[in-house]
Image (cartoon, rainbow, N blue to C red; front, side, top):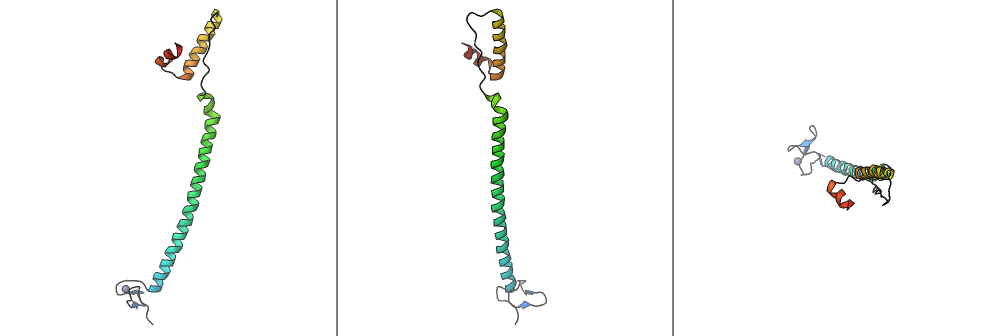
Length: 119
Ligand SMILES: [Zn+2]
């Protein structure tokens, strides 16, 4: 019994296709089954890949958060504004100037902001 393609054409046993070039129906069934198997495999791989990416992203985020807390927090912490006693001596004034310059550097304020901050 001659094989037939999906459209009912007789399949040539030598070329294994019909006169229009269609493969035998059984092959199509196998091909469709393969397609499904491949689709399932891709789907499964995608789920695994997505999971891995999500896990990796979470780990990176946690790593970044860890880095921020470990390295940046001391620098981002608001610097302590130096205070000057009213009855200060020369040494205290020098110390205040030094501390104030350091405060300005740490705060990275613009001149205008510093003026606002001082008065
Ligand atoms: Zn055909």
